[in-house]
Structure formats: C-alpha cells, structure tokens
Length: 415
Ligand code: PLP
Image 1 (cartoon, rainbow, N blue to C red):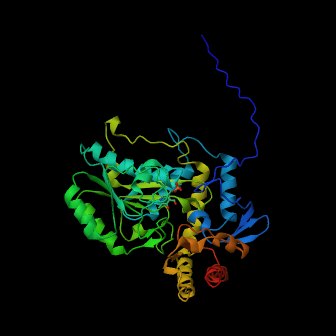
Image 2: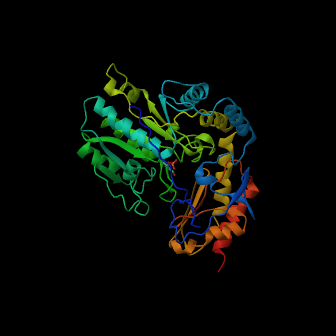
Image 3: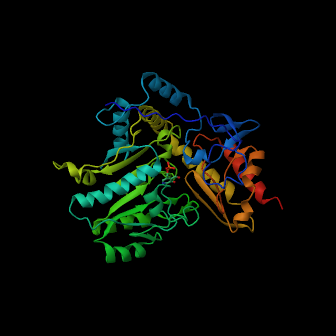
C-alpha cells in the first residue's frame, strides 16, 4: 500500500525580528551589520562607504573581490554544471585541482580529500589519523596533542582540539586531548609518557590565528617533526589560515613536511566554501586494502563541488603566475616599516609575519569602538578580544596598506 505523507506548514509571518542569526555575537546587543552592495578589488562598498578590506573576509579573499578571470571561470563552469556528487562520479575540475595540489605541495602529500569548510577538513584529518592506527590494529592510539590557545574550527572535535577559553566555554570536553606550548621539551615530555596512546600532533604552523596572531619559530616544527617520527605520531598542519602565502611561505609545509595538511579559506580565493585534507602516501596506504571496513567513511555532499574546484584552479593559477610571493614580501616590509614607530602605553606587542600584522593591547576595552572608527575612516576591520590586526588581500597597493596603518595610528593618537 502506498503511503503519502503530507507536510503542509501554516504560513509564518515575520515578527520584525532579525532572521539571520549572526556569528560570534550576542544578538540582543548586536549592532546592525553594514549592508554590502558590491565588492571589487580590495574594496567593499556598503550603502554609504567605500572601504579597504583590511582582513580579506576572514583571511580568505587573497585576490580581493570579483576578480575578472575567476568570474569568467566560474560563469563558464556554471553554464556547464555546478555540482554533481563525487560518489561514483568525477569531473575535470576536481581531478585537475587534486593534480595541481599534489604538484605544488611538498613531499608525498598526494592524496586529496575534498570537503566544504576548514572545520570539516580538520575533522577529516583527525578521523584519518585515528582510523589509520585502527586499521593497523593499534586502536589504543587515539589521543591528540594540540597547542595551547589553538583554534581549528567550530565543529565538535575541532573545538575539542582547540583551546580557546573564550569561544567554546559551553563545550569543555577534552578527553584524551593535551595542550602544550610550542616548546620542544613539553612535546617530548608528553610523548615519552604517552606515545603508545598518542595518534596525532596537530598545529597551526608558525601562526596561530584566532589565538591572536601568535607567532613562533620554525625550529619548533623541525624538532617536532623528528619527535613525531621517533614516536610514530601523525603530524598534522592545519594550514587553513597559513596556506597560500600568508606567512611569507607558499605553505609552511614547504619548510617542514607534515603527514597531513589541511587547506581552506584561500583555496578558492575566498569565493566559495571549499577545503581539502591532503594526506601522504603512508596514511593513504593505511586505508588501501581488500578489506572494505578499512575504507575512509566520510563524504560531505558538496565535496569536490565543480564550481568551487574550477574557482580554486583559477585562483591557484593567479597565485602562482603573478609573483604573489614577491607581493607578500613587499607587504611584510611595508608593515614592518610603518608599524615600528607606532607607540602607545596601551600596546603590549606588535608582531608581523608575511602578510599579517597584529597589535596586541593590554586591555580589550581599548579596542572597543575601533571597527566603527575604522569604518568612518574608510577601512573595514574587526578586532577580536585584545587584538587589532590586518591580513589584507595580496593585491593591495602600498598607499592602501599605509592607509590601514594610518587608521590604526589615528586610533591610538586620539588622546
Ligand atoms: N582552522 C584554522 C586554523 C582556522 O583559522 C579556521 C577558521 O578561521 C578553521 C580551521 C575553520 O575553518 P572554517 O571557518 O572554514 O570552518
């Protein structure tokens, strides 16, 4: 007998409440967001302002906005098709992007698993590492070491490996997860004690973004690589924020090669959400078997989305073609030169790495109202906690970058 289920809803009327639930904000006291009408190059146009985007839309829009070459590629792809499932089907955009990533990533980081956001790509990396040991009959190895103040995304395991007291208070579960400072003695001490249980060491390499652009030296990663090899631990670089040039390296993974790299944000030049978890040969072989139960069980609906892959391919073409690494070096030089004489008793520290600069103040209250202030001066910026920072699109011109720094200075010069 055929059953038909009817799900007609009564029409619901809006009650004047804001229907979008915005991120990272108390809705009751939230100021109405500015409405964007257009974005082009490094500029965001709202109803009343033309703003230099100093933060690349959460560090993703490396080419700025509405790049003509990327637009063209996207339109061409949409006119063909935008998405088909990657289960049982594939297509040139996904195949070519995987090939391209394999080509530009170092070592044998060759096996690309696509997903739709940085957080999910982090989840995928952790699942891969833990199942790798499971597949080898080492199911005890499932604990994780991460860095203090780490941020790896807002999904459950990504929050658990994170260490951000302010963001995820309601989700304190950290069983089998240990947080250390980027100091080799700390890593060594815990590995000596627990290596038979530890599966993963995951880091944001060199630059811990949401921690407040905390920076540390490459030596730690070099030493950590050796320890991970010695104790049979999978080393994961979450390069969601650092990848594609932000630290002054194309990838930090070029300096120290991890077992798994996680990419997101700038993968698509900030156009659409897409991410990749790329594993080395060793990990891949841990799954490659006649045993179906050793397969990797994960498959986001939009993984390998053709539109996203086509956009990512064009974004990468431009990134590799247009001397971006030189542009990033120049941005770094301008940031160092212009910020070195920024002085205020409120400032605790100023740090620069690649196309990223952060001004840390002692008291978060000293940054209250800065976003509004920057807005009125033609700069789009959002501080968080006690950090004011810029991570501009790489296409930014010197005078635009200097304008951002000038607004930072003006803020501290007010009294
Ligand atoms: N990992 C790092 C290092 C990040 O900075 C972020 C986002 O800021 C994520 C993961 C999460 O990425 P998404 O917001 O795309 O889920």
